[in-house]
Amino acid sequence: MNYRDVFGEVLADHHESPRNWGLASDSQVRENGFNPLCGDKVTLGLKFRDGQLESCTFEGEGCSICMASASIMTEMVQGQPLSKVSGLIEGFRAKMQGEDRPDVLPADDSSEDIVALYGIKRFPVRIKCALLPWTTLKKGLETHHA
Image (cartoon, rainbow, N blue to C red; front, side):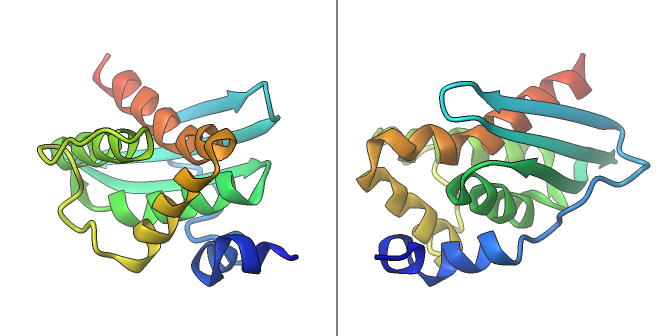
């Protein structure tokens, strides 16, 4: 059985052709995330302007779920107001942990990419892989506000 059979075309596509790969030299915040249990590493490059997350790029190494999650996340958050980005982070975390939190779920919950990522819940040991980029983004926003 191959990766596409288990996790689907959308996640395989994001893993094989990650969006927003590479850290811009003008990133205002660089935030590192690491999961010592599985070895996933992700570094985000963040650029802010006028209360928005203008740019979110990444580099990393690790499992295909973590890299696909980072790719999907960067597409969702770029150009968004920081308040919406915070809501997306919280909504994703809640959804992945099985919480019924309609107040924080992403408004664009119907996008094919994020729905595919929600499917990782079927594999509880892999949820942390999917969450790593999102928790790293949360730390990056906190660093920006500090």
